[in-house]
Length: 266
Image 1 (cartoon, one colour):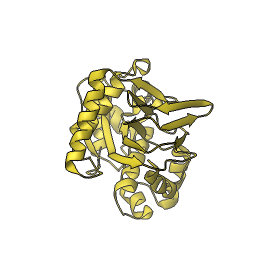
Image 2: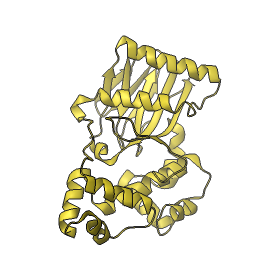
Image 3: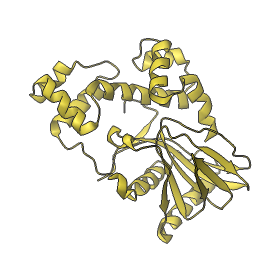
Image 4: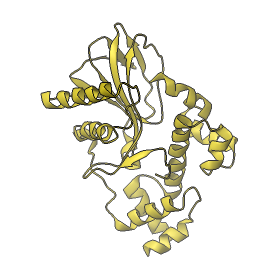
C-alpha cells in the first residue's frame, strides 16, 4: 500500500493484510443500529454479555469464538453486561473482499484462546488502549482467523507473474493512473486480453484496482489523520471532494464524513 500510515506485512501462504487499527476497550454501553464499514472486522470478547444481529440472525458473543465481519455488512450491536472487547479493523487484498455480507463465526481451540489471552496480557502490560505497536500480533490474529475460514478458500490467486507485475506497476505509480495499454505492453499482451486476464485473477479491472487502492488510502487517512476531506481527496488522486464523495457513496453507501464519524463506533 502507498500509505506510510498503514502497517503491512505479507504473511506466507496468506492474503496480504493491512491493519487499520487494533484496540481493546471495556464496553459499558455498546448499542448501535448499523455498523457497516468498508473494512473487515475481527471481534473477540473476554466474557459473555454482548450480541450482534444481522437481519434475522442473532449471535451472542462468547470468549471461545472469534467473529469475522466482511466489508459493508450491515449489522447492529448490543450489550447487556460490561465486557472486555478486543477488535481489529483491517483490509485484505482485493480477491478476498468478494465475501458476501455475513457473520463468520470461528470456534477457537484451547491453544488459540490462550494465544489471544496472551496477546491481551501484553496489551495490559503496555497500559494503553492502542495496541498497534504490537504489529505482528494483530496480523497473526487476523491470519489465524482467515486460515480457519475454509469455505472462503483463503488461498491467493495472484500467481500470474504478469498480473503481479501489473499490480506492482500500478502501486509504484500511485496515485496516478497507468494506461491499460502501458500495462498490457509491459505484460507482452493484447490490451483486451490483458484486461480480461487481470479481471479473472483479481476480480476487477486495472482501473477498478486503482480506484479501490485510492479508496483504501482515503479510508486510512480519514481514520488516522486530521486532514480535511478536500486534502484527502487531493492526496489520493480524486479530482475533488465531490468526486471522493461520489466514489465513497457508490462503493460504501456512506460519505467520507460519515465514515470518519462511524470509526468511533467500533
